[in-house]
Length: 327
Image (cartoon, rainbow, N blue to C red; front, side, top):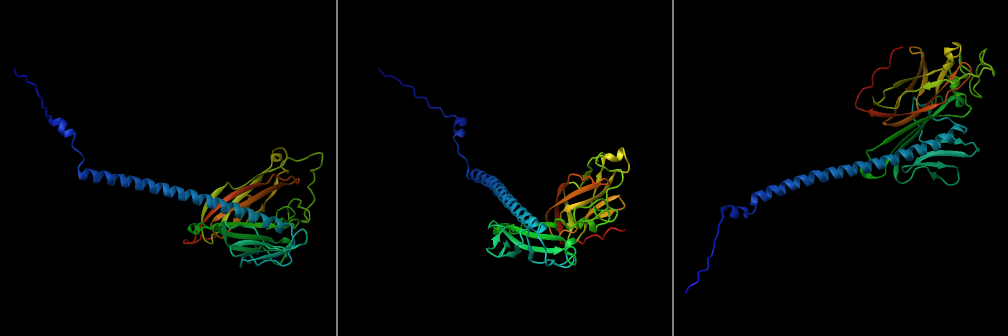
C-alpha cells in the first residue's frame, strides 16, 4: 500500500519580484542625494555657528570700546589741558596728556593694539587681549582756546582673532570740560549771545522778568533724532535736526524753549533758522556706532531731562559725498 504525500510548490511572480534588491544605479542616486542634503545642512550649520561666533566677538568689541571711551571721557572732562591736541579739521594726535582732577599727569596712548593709561607709575591697559585697537586719535575743535575747546576722541578696534580682523568698529565721542562754558560759544545757547542763563563759569544773561520763585516753570522736553542707521559716503557731512517743546508756552507765549544744545557726542551743533530749531552736524570718520546727548532750556531757565540717542553709521569709501546744503 502506498501513501502519497502531496508536495506543493508555489512560485508567485509577485513574490519573486518583491524580493529583488536595489540596483547599483539606485544606490548611487540615493547616496548622491544624501550627500547633497548633508552638505547643504552642514554648510548652513557652519555659517550659523560662524555668524554667532562673530556676533559674540563684535559684542565684546563694542563693550570694550564703550568702556575705554567712557573711562577716557570722564577723566578728560574733569581734568585740565595744558597743551591742546591738533585741530580736528587738520589731523588727529595719537596721544593726549593732561592733569586729572587730582592733579596727576595722565597720558592716553596706543601701544601694541591696546589703549594705555599712564599716570607716571605703572601704565595700565584699558582694553584686554580679546580686542585689537587699530587706531586712537585726539583732536580739539578750537586748539587756540582750551577753555572753550571740545576734545574729540576717535577709536577703531576689531576682534583679536585673525578670521574676524575685517570686522572693524569705530567709536567717536566729543568731551566738554566741566565748567568750561563751552555752550556759550554758540549764539542762542545757554550763556551765549541772546541765550538763557548758562552754566557756572559760562557767563550768560539774568533770568527774564516774570520768572520768579513763586512761579516755577515746567521743564521743557527735548526732541532728538530717532535711533537709526545711516549709509553715508566717506567724507560726507550729516545734518540731523533736533528741537524742543515747552508746556508753559500754551498759557504764556513768553515762556518757550530758548535753546537746545548737544551735551555730549561727536560733531557740533548750530541753530537752524529754516526749522527754527537746531542741527547736529557730524562727519563720520568711519563705520561704527556713536552716541549723542541733547538737552533744552527755556526762557525761565528750566532745563529738560537730557536724552541720548544711538546712531549707526555705515561709511562707503567708494562713493562721492554730496555737496553741502545751500544757505
